[in-house]
Image (cartoon, rainbow, N blue to C red):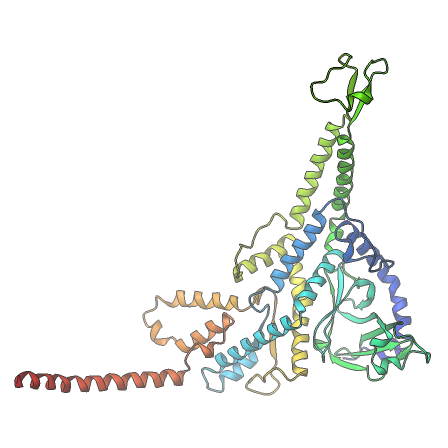
Length: 519
């Protein structure tokens, strides 16, 4: 699809750094908001630009912000990436299914389904090996607090990298699809490859010198993304690449989608007022409680009591004086503290509901069922405002596409027999996927519903059912279930053994009768 604009001329008129600096102004308000949100929840998640590794962050006077962010992130991760099974499903489209059915092999679809289940498990193992889940969980925290983050999955080397909002810029079209991004990295000169070092000016460069590396990615013709890397205004030799739209290794994420905005809003934005009020009132209560605990004693100036001797007195000692010579000073703020504490409880209750702290949808068990995961996903959808649907579309789907592209580049994925050339495999994510545990539920319902039919057992393809159940459970069914050929061979052996036993029985009986007659 042609846009009518020479994209290379448009995007490469300026250097990547100049283009980055132009787009920073549109991002500034989102960065400032992210810093403010982090200070009230988890300050180290998004420090200001002057922060260093030695910066000491001021701890908020309340902990519900940090607890709420961590709890919500954990529930999002549980719904999007269940720990026990794939979060996606590979399947053939309707056209491909028809073409496979025309081949006449009744077990072909079952074989393809088993193969796709094996690929799903391979992708999940690949994710765990490359520690993708850890990086993605950090990204979810960024989404809750800052509303935006960027994931990069290197096609050749594998793995995953996270960029905070203050390290990249992005441009989206009117429909919300991103069409341009520039990522900024600060790398020491010694860590750069020779091609990148050649772009650094000067002959005597310190190995510890930090160099700004810019990666510019843009949509070239509607279906292809082009990428290049730049240092000090020079394009690094060999860095120019092209990617299909569905395999681009960059995933710019946002939590709250707003029409006409290239960046998203965070979840903390919606409850910043309550968090700020709770922090202020918690600070006041702490300060007033400290003052209330401070003990002072007032001595009547006309009293004959000697304070220096009184403070060293033992229990039971006698002194000249009268009642009232010494009184305790108290800060009479009990009623004010009660009012403040009641308001604090109301704020905590509202925030606990907002961040799902009062929700207990997961039982304590080693394995979480598909139904429990579905419950969490529905709760995120209903209570937190379509977070699950948005992230399944903008995170799960491109993530699977990138991981498959990485494995294909490494030659690690098997070919899927699809019946004809050009048939594409569909990736199913979101509520309908939720791993293959959903397929197991469908199989169980089918068997229970059809069990009442008189000839159901005779017409059931037991081998295919066993294979599909194993695939739905994430198991290698071939290692557990005999194939049709193995089952037929076993049946033949059993019949032969039974016939031999039947033939041998009269002979043995006759021999026993002869022995008895001889005796």
